[in-house]
Image (tube, rainbow, N blue to C red):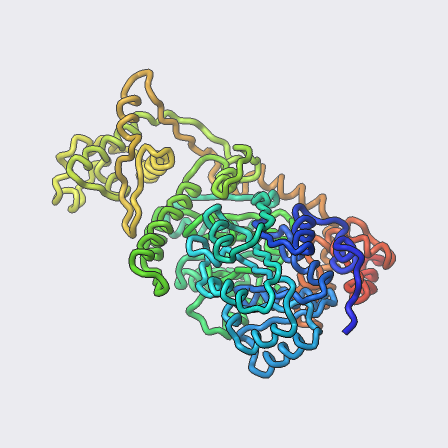
Length: 623
C-alpha cells in the first residue's frame, strides 16, 4: 500500500490535522521520537499528547503501537484518526475472534499506521507472532501513570509492558505520556519501562480556562440545593457529576431527570450494555449530564464538557485534577466545582481501607493504604483552604506559581480577616487535655466538649471534668469545624489517618500554645468569606460572559453546531469528532467563504475540508 509522503512534521500538522503551529513541547517530543530517542512526557489534559506520537507514525517507515487503558479511549482515538484519513485500528476485548484476526491481517499487510492495544492483549501469542515480521518503530504508552502503584489508577497489567518489549525482535522507541504524575510516579515510569536516555518533558499543569470552585454545604439537603442551583446557571452543552457511591449516582441522576435536566448514570453496578448506552448518549449529546463514579471518564475526549462537579471529596489530588480536567478540553471556559462536607472524609477513608489488592503482600498493602491516606489529607487541605486553589493544585505537582490567579472561588471571594487566637487556643488546649488522658477524638466530639454537650459518650468518659468543657457554648459548630480545619492546614494540629480520623497535637502545638498566650505573641487569623455562592458571583459571571461573547457569534455558532450534529448522526460518531467547539468558534471568527479560506481555520485539514467543506461553507456563506 502506497503511503502518503510528507516533507516535515509541520507539513503533517497543517495538511492532516489542520493546525498552523505546534503547541508547547509537541515539536521537541516529535523530533526526539523521529531521531530514535525515548520520551517521558507529563503534559496536562488538552495539551495535545496524542499528536506527539501520531505525527511520527505518519513520517516513519514502521508502524506505531499505542498501549491504552480503556476501550472508550481507543474507540475515540481510532474514530478521530479515521476522520483524518489515517489507517488505524485497535485490539481489545470488544472485538470477536474474527475481528481480531482481520485486524492482525491488516497489520501484516502494512495497511495500518497505528494500532491501539489494551495492556491485557500484550501477551497474545498471535500478536507477538505478527510483530516478528511487521516490527513496530514506536511504542507509545498512554496514561503511563497507570504503571505506578503509587499513582492514580494503578493497573497491574501495565507492569507487563516491559516483558512485552523484551519479547519484540527489536526494541522500538518508547514514548510514555501522562497528564498527572508526581515526581515519585515519574520515577516509577522511568524505572519500570527502563527508558534509555529519555527526553523528559514536564509541562506546566496549569489550565487557564478552568475556573476552580469549592463550596461547603452544611447538610445533604443544602448540598443537593447547591448542585441544582449550579447546573441551572450553566449555559454549556454538557457536564459531568462525580459521586463516591453508586447509590448517590442513582439518586442524583433521578433527581436531575425529575427536574427536566436530561441525565444518564454510569457506575460498575450497571450492566456493560447499559453503561455503554449511557456513555454513548453522553458522547453524542443525547443527554446533557452524566452522573458517575470514578469508573467513568479516563481518556474520554469529549471536547464540549462545560462543567465538572465533584459531589463528594475525591480520594487524591491526582484523581481530582484528572477528573476535573475533563472540562474545557477545547480551550473554552469551563467550571470545576467541588462540594465538600466533612462527612465525605469518613466515606473516603472507608473506601481507601476496603480496597482489595491481591497483587500485594500485607506489608506492601499496608504501606499503600498509608500512602493513599496521606494523599487524601492533601485533598482535604485543598478543600478547606482559603488560599488560591490553582496555586495549591500546581504546587502539589511541584510547580511554583503566583499565589493569586483571579480565576478560582477563593481568589474571587471577598474576605474578612478575623483574629481567632482566643478560639484557637481553646481548641488546641482541649486537644491537649485529651492527650493528657491518652485520648484522641474526632472533630465532632471535640466540638461537643467545647460547647458543653450532655452527650452520653462525654458523660460516660467523664469528659465534662475537663477544664475546657463548655468554654465555647455559643460558637456555631460549622465555625468550630472551620477553625479546626485551618488549625490542621497550618499544622498546629494534625488529623490522623484511618477510617475514623481523630484530631491530635502536632510538633507545633506546644509552640503555638506558648506563643499565642502572650499579648505580643503568635496570632491565629481566620479568613472568612463574605460571599455565599462564588459560582454565581458577579465577578465570575462577568469573566465567563466576556470570554464567551468575544469568542463566537452565537447565532452562526448554533447553525454550525446543528450541522455538525446532523453529520455526526449520519456517520454514527460523536459530534466533536467531526469538529470540536474551538474549530466552530474559529469558523465564526474568520467566516471563510471559499475552500482555501476554510483551510485557514484551526482544526480543518485537507481530508476534513474535502469531506465536509461544502456543507459548512454553505452555512457560513448564508451567515
